Length: 379
Image 1 (cartoon, rainbow, N blue to C red):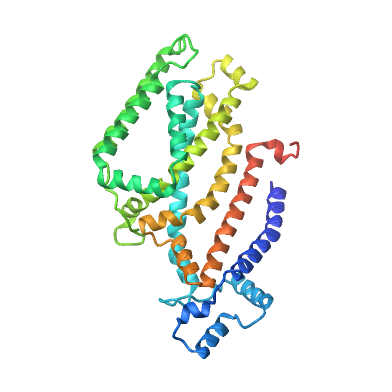
Image 2 (tube, rainbow, N blue to C red):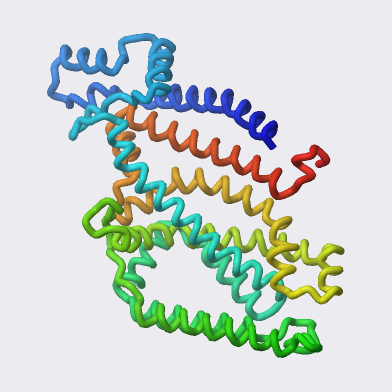
């Protein structure tokens, strides 16, 4: 395992070097003069020359890249020349936590939706629940993020009563579907001495789910239309989660639909393997087969797609941040591109790229944990 991690870290060095090259030189291709944008059309030639000198635009591009890379490695990201003028590191420190929280919350919410639903429908392929879930997933995938955000604002902010009833009825339908017989089985519950315990456990789980639904129906929270409340603010964690819930849910809806479909397909294939059929023949509980025997080998594709999605969510949260008026990295980069604030854009793009590369390296290492054959070099 240590050798695998060391090799992955060694591979990161040339990748990150290429990322820095692309980040710096691609911005050089943007037309226009940053000095003209900063100073405005009424400035003198001397003022333009002074701004270019401060930005380093009067020096060769290779020399500027070397200086920029050296400053970046030491944590000196430069200074923004647009009001309010401040250090780029200060801007990143204020905005990066917002984007990271929205991204992490959306990934967590998507996994909480996708994994249980995939387990349920994969154990009942071809059932009514499977067909309804598949149709709902296709519908969610086809909805763009800006439209999903507007729809969530309309229902969760202005039509909360409708959402409460929909959540309650959908939960009741899910509980009823879980209590229904599995297609192809002769009876709802397995025969034998464990029948009573099986029935008791199913009823208890159904009652717990019903209690959660009723509690959610009675205490459904109010969500703000826009804005963001920080954890360190006066309102604390509760208000922070309320302000971040709808933006995170907007990003999570599409991801959950994609991940659920992907995991469902892999689970259905895994459940046909010989070792799973042998576990069923031994009378192993269905939940144990799904969670311990089928989920782990079926999660390779899911983990890969999650790693790709992290980078896309970090860079693609611009629309969501604009809809919900969030002070995140996406909003900062849009303002930097519009104003040709190269230091801001370069730092933002580089941070997202580095985060994306590091996360995917961690995912590559996780393959060795999921499948020991990879760790031993047999696959």
